Structure formats: C-alpha cells, structure tokens
Length: 506
Image (cartoon, rainbow, N blue to C red; front, top):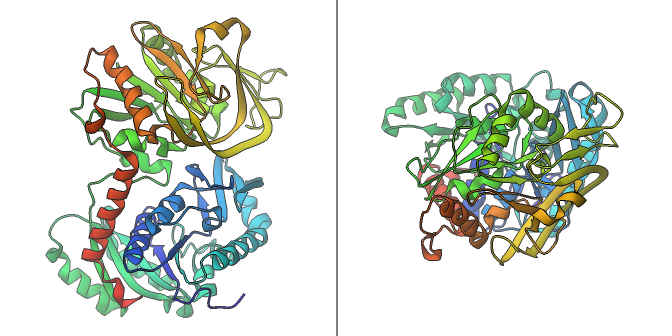
C-alpha cells in the first residue's frame, strides 16, 4: 500500500486521555468537511465498546463510528471500525474483525496473540475504503492516550496508524477534568521526535465560561510547545451519544419536570445503551438510570436494556435484590420493556448449553431462572444473529419498524403461557407482550433501535400516559428522532466552526 492513502491529507484526532472528547470532535470535523464539499471518511482502527451498530451487510461496528459516518453524510460500514473489542467481564473481550466475531481474548494475551491479525484487518479496511471513496479524506480517531508507554510498542490505532498514513494530527485536551497544561505538555514530552512532528494543532475541549479568561493559557501553550492552539470548544449542554458505559455516570436529565418518569436499569455489562437516546430527548419523558443496589422507587415505566453478559447481569440483579423490586413493581401493574438481554431476563428460564456466556453453573442443567414476568424460554445457541431488520408492529399499534438484531439467544413462548402473549411485530421471533394489571404491560423484543421509530415510540409512551390518565401525545407535538439527531450534529458543527480554526491544517 502506498504511503498516501487518499488525495487530501488524512487528519487524526488524538486525545490526552480517554474521554477527552475524541469521538465528538471527529464527528464535528466530519460534518465541517462535509459543509466544505469534501467527502470525509471516519475511521477508528480499534475501538473497545459494547455500544454496537450493525451495517447493511450484517457487519458489527462501534456505534460512535456509525455516528461519525452520519455526520459525514455516509452510510456506516464496518470498514470504518475494523477492530471492535467487546468487554465480557473477567478481563476478557470478544474480538470483532471487519464486522465478524473471530474469537475471544484475555487482556494479558491480546497484544501477543492479536496484534498481527489486527494490523492486517486495519490494512484490509483501509484498502476497502480507498476503493469506495477514492477522493475522500480519511478522518481518524485515536483511542485513549497515544503515550501509554507499556502498550506503545503494540499500538494499533494511534501513532502507528498516523505515521503509516502521514496524517496531520490534532491533540484534544479536556479542561473540564482539570490539569489541562499537564495533559498537553506530558503527552508531547512522551512522544518521540518523529512522532511529535505529526501534531499540527491542539484543541482545548469542554471549557466553561468566558473564553477570554483562557487567553493567557492559550498563549503559554503555544509558546511552550510551538504548536498552534486551533481553538477552545465550549461545554455543550446538548446530550450527545456516549461511547462507553462509563459515560452514563455523567448523564443528566434534560426533562426533570416531565409528566412521565422512566427508569432504566444500568446493568454492569450494559450494551447498546444508545437505544435510550430517543427517549432522552422526549420533552414529556424524564429518563433516569438505576444501578443494582439502588431503590427502584415508583417510576411510570421501566426498561431493562441489552447486556453483553445477560445471565451474569441477571444474577447481579437478584443478588442486589433489585430483581425483587422489579417483580413487585410488575405485580402492582407496572409497565416494563426489555430489549435483547433485558427481554431474555423477563422470561421463565435461560439455557446456555454451549456456555456462550462463560457461566459457572451450580449444576449440569446450565439453566438459569429468569424474572418470570413473561412465559418465554431463551436458549443461547452458538450462532450470532446480527442483521438490519424492517418489519410491521402489531403492538401497541400497526406501523413500520426498522432496527437491527444483535444477539445469540433464541426466545420462544412456553406452551402453558402462549395464550397470555401477543406478538409485538409480525415476525413473532422478535418479541412478545403480556397485559398487566391496571393498564400495565410486560413486553420485550430483540429489535435494537426500536425507540428510534417515532410513531411506535409515541404510541408506547401513550400507553404509559393512559395508565396515568394523561391525554395522548399528538403527532405534531412529538419529537422526530432522526431530524433531532441531524440537528444535534449541525449544532455540534456550528460550535466547532465558530471556535476552531481548522483551515490551518486542511
């Protein structure tokens, strides 16, 4: 492969630490370049996240790279994230290469066993993107810090990639967490001379207050480093999709005075938490997170989201007694919705004959008792289902649904409970619902992204409002998710272009 990957110079967003804002800055840069008439192609060689997306070919990739593709005006493809590591707990991860699961690894073995196959996957992905977008500009996102000295010799997605592509790099530092000068100087000091030359600009991220107060700090950084500070990004009040479940700790509620309260269980191995994004922006909804060990309280509805370790998370719900609270809430006529792993937990039993989830069973049956809220049984087979879906809903109304499946388990009703269940969609493999007392219901499905369907989401919320004797939401007053996502990306790009001088490096 030639050194020059694409006609325009590749750009790379590096961070002084994890959580510095690389993902959003990359998305902002992609949208800013799109406004300039360029084709910007997002790329992150290696990502670690359980928040995944399925592309049109059934390839698995990180949701943050899908978001960056939408910012660039492109259809997401797993070549934009050729290595995805999905943590499973116990220092182990599932390894995804070019959209496909290729094995599992312990953290201590990863760089020894997976470095060469990983670098090969990265080069294959770059070649595919070059063929698909011959005139595009690659916009790369790094991972964590580029100067983790114990890992640098096996780095797959930071400086090795930047040097390979001769990319112009931008270093992002998070001033919100404090120590921004030490972040920048420390990072640059740990770079080798030929690596330091790749850094063409610095961005100060998440600044609160009057930026004039940072004028002297900006001047000091430029004099000390000889690298221009391209600008200072302000603290953004809008909620943007988190990349990592740790980001959920800092999530806050936009609609504290809303008419309906929806609790979401923050499972230890939560996955695909972007499923909640459409509800977070609903003006009528106050969405908040509950951890095992917390009190459930009296929400108007609750959601159990997906999990990378369904059986393990189910056991933790039981050990923390949160499971007892959920069951009691259901008995009192509550409204519960489970997605993927959360759907499986609602059933009578979960069977793992192939030990897909690496469980330590107390006996040879390999069967775990669920929450017994839906008369269904799940069996984990050794075939991973991952595909985009389009179907028609049967409940709570009939409307077109789009989303994607990403799971191992297959769920079916048990014979004695079939008469209690109604299909959620015309495809009965996707999910079921059971009526509950006092206008409540227990429901679950395998369709990730179900809440992104505006009409379906509005009708589900209206079920909650009916239980509270509130009037129904009208179509013209409800939120349009995809329009809102586009608005957020536009606001992000507006702020980026107002505060960052990218002309210096493009």
